[in-house]
Amino acid sequence: MIEYKKGNLLEAEAEALVNTVNCVGVMGKGIALQFKQAFPGNFKEYAKACKNNAVMPGKMYVVPTGYMLNPQYIINFPTKRHWKEKSKIEDIKSGLIDFIDTIKEYGIKSVAVPPLGCGNGGLNWSQVKPLIEASAQEVPDVLFMVYPPEGSPEPDKMRVGTEKPKLTRARALLIMLMNLYAAPGYKLSMLEIQKLAYFLQESGEDLKLRFVSAQYGPYADNLNHVLQRLEGHFIRGYGDRNRDAQIYLLPEVIKEAEAYLNSIEDATSEERLENTKKIIEGYETPYGLELLATTDWVIKHNPDAQASEDRAIDHFKAWNDRKKKVFKESHIKMAWRHLTSNEI
Image 1 (cartoon, one colour):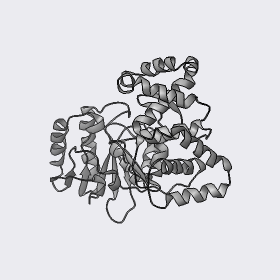
Image 2 (cartoon, rainbow, N blue to C red):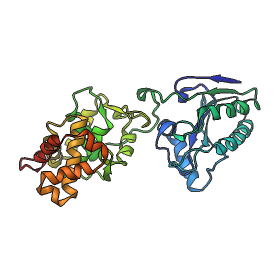
Image 3 (cartoon, rainbow, N blue to C red):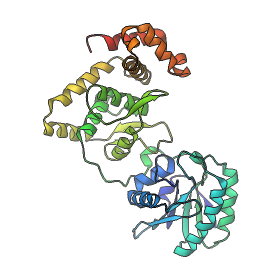
Image 4 (cartoon, rainbow, N blue to C red):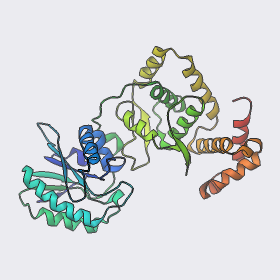
């Protein structure tokens, strides 16, 4: 029997929840990231299985939750071979065969099913839907709660089951900088947090972030791992990276971060926060921070741009077509002069 549902699959009252995964041990986006945050034990088992080549197309990887109540099982359904690739309809077909065998083997009577291979996988729901319906007919006494594609739930409503991470100097400084930048309760975009972290690291604080030149300026993918750890404990709104994140600090975290920094008694932390604040002053918008961070990168990676604002403009415009269209030369000059002045 099939019931079509809306809402958060992870909150479904089903014996088994289906998580769509790749075969290389990465849950970095979409519903897989939601599962990683909500069921960290499942992720550990799955990642270990991937290292042992035990996760493959056409085979379910089942992890019991150990809960007395539902969900009792997470069924990891491989819909991609690698996270960089798109899903193949053949893998959905072969996977559904083993999926039905798994339901029978475990005696499962209700299961919540996402749109297999759609979304980030790129498959069309009109292809996948009839395959799920045909499979459900093989076990008519099992309730299939099917969630058609409709986007992720609101980040605030996504379940977080990870342990609260310990504060470190880097995490505490990032929290303090986010608070300095935004008025209390104001939400920050991912672009702004990326640029804040960039300037904090450039001020001398080794955050161990690996910045590269990307579409919107300097970008560190491993900052996402930091924010994943903080989500639900120190920040909220990061979600599953499927929508434009609007992140805010949770109550009381500023006091925790301040207490931690006071406990380590390192004067350089306050100094670096103040330096970063001084650098970004007057540029506290997504446009302003992208402009400033891109200009800073251009200056530091092109010797001729350090001495000439005109050469800096040339390098800035050569970054990509978007930069050329969006940013005015007069603004680039202002950013260059701000960054090269002796006052910062």
